[in-house]
Length: 205
Image 1 (cartoon, rainbow, N blue to C red):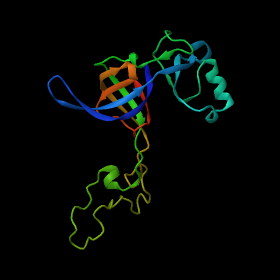
Image 2: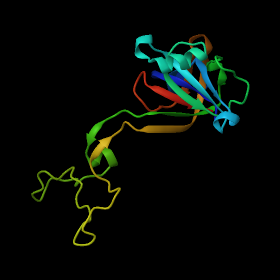
Image 3: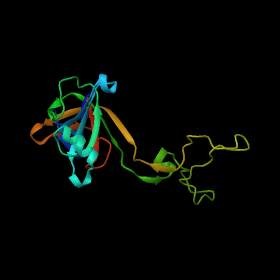
Image 4: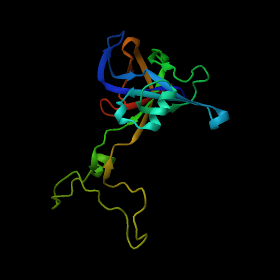
């Protein structure tokens, strides 16, 4: 699927023609530079490698500098490959937010907010004991039994327990593009998308 690399700016809301308030996310999408063209003859598949968001030269290395120099562009912070563009773009071309149209549906992937080490109530939605009677002074949010006894004498893999939460790649599908603002490289997408403000996201169509 073709798409662009973007940056989450934040959330707002707009009114539709019926006066209904719609929550939406503002995304800075592109312009992205074609930094490499993958071909079937050389790489075994067809794809475009896009670069987004300039970074300082001192933050790059010689190998990356040479890679971006071939495309005639400066060093980029984020590089992602996309399939489905076809042969219309060449090395060094710029793809803007106008690649999307108002009203179409897109898939957005990003890294969710990291929430650190969390218990089972927050992480998995356990209900807890629900009461503090009968001497249960410290069991309200405890996980309870995990099922192990003399058989199977171990804890099964994948058991829902406390642990690190968030910081994972999450894709939200079928979000509608409400507005395209070409002069500011902005997309207004209905609903929430994963990640914190200024985090990188991948928008696919």
